[in-house]
Image (cartoon, rainbow, N blue to C red):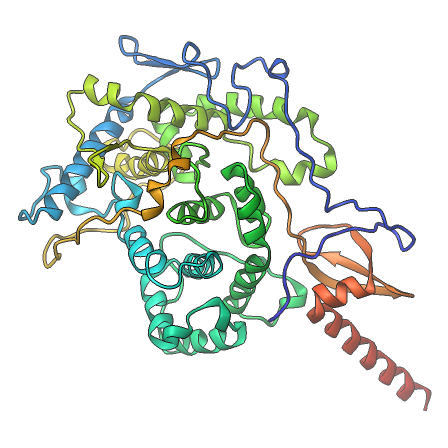
Length: 489
C-alpha cells in the first residue's frame, strides 16, 4: 500500500470549490461560560481553588469537594515502595525487594515511566543510536512505536542493518519481511494495549501490518512540519490524533515517546491525557461521583462548538476534572509523601538535580494503582470490571537491571519553560478515502472513512493523494463496460 491518509474533504457539490473540512479553527473560551473555576482542558486552577484538607480527607478541585478513599494513601505508598524496589534491584541487592505481597508477586510498571524496560530501550537503542537528523530520528520513533515491542525492533534491526532508515524505507519490503516473521509464529505488536486499525473498503485486502506501515509513511510526510512549527505540545497531539487507528490513549503514548527526543522540546507538565486505567484509578480514589460533574463541565465547554466540528473535540476534551486532579498531584507530591511519612527516592540528573514526578508519571501511577487496588482494596470499584491481575512476577532468574539512562534531550533548557495552551483540543483530522462512488467531468464523488457524508473532489487531487482508490474505481468501470458490451451481443 502506497497511499497517504491525508486527503482533505473539500467540495460538497460538483460546482463547489469552497474548503469545508481542511480549515482548522482555534477556539478560546471565556471563563464566564463555566460555573466551575476550571476554565479549560489545559489550564491549571489557581492555588486557592485547589487544595487538600487532610483533616476531612477532602480534595477541593474544579468547584468540587472530593472525599478520598483509602486508595488515595495507597497511591503515594505504592509510588514510594515501587521506586524503592527499583533502587534495590539496580544496586544488585538480593530478592525479595519488598515485603508487599502484591508488589512482590505481580508485574507493575515503575514509578517513573522512563524507568520501564520498554522506555529505557526506546531511549538507549532507538533514539540515542542511529543517525540524529530530525527525519531519521522521527522515523525510528514512529516505527518503534507502531509495534512498541522490543523483539520486533530487533528483528528489523538485525535484518535491515544500516538500511533501517527512512531513506531506504519501503512499505512493501517491510511488510513482506514482517509478515514472513508473523507466519513463522513471531508476535509483532505489543501486548500492553490494543492497536486497532479501522477497516476501510478501499483497504479491505490490506494486512494490518501494511496499514500501520502506511500510517508511518503518511506521518513522515506531514508530522515534521507540525513538529517544527509547534508552539505547544498539544498541537502535536491534535495532529497525531487525526490519523486512523490513533485513539486518545495511543496518541498520548506516541507524544510521550517523542518527548524522549529533541523533536518535542516541551515540559512534560505542559500536557496530559488520562487513559482509561487512570480514569478508573481516580474513581477508586475519589468515588465515581466526580465523573458526573465532569460531564456537566464538558457539556458547557462544548456549547460554543459548531455541530460539524463536534467530532474533532468531543472525545478529546472529556477529562477536564481528571487533568486538574493530576496537575494538583504533581504540585503537591512532596506534601503528600511528608504527610504519610514516606521518603520517596527521587531520580537525579547528571548534575545531581532532583527530577520530580511529572504528569506522565502520575497518570501512569494512578493507572497502576487501579490494578493494585484490585487486590489491596477489592471492595472499592472503579470504572473497569476487572478484578484480577493478569501478569504475575517472579524474581527468580531476574538479571540486575542496567544503569538508568535519561534522555539526552531532557537537558534542553526549553523544557523548563511551562507552555500550556488555553482552550479546547481540536483534532486536525486526517481524512482518507473509503471509496469513489461516482464521477462527473473532472471530479470524483468520494466517501470518507468514518463519515457518513460524501463530497465531490477534483479528479487530479484524488489521483495524487489516493491512487489505490482511483485504481479500484477505474477497474470497476472497466469491468462494468465489458459486462455491458457482452450483454449487447
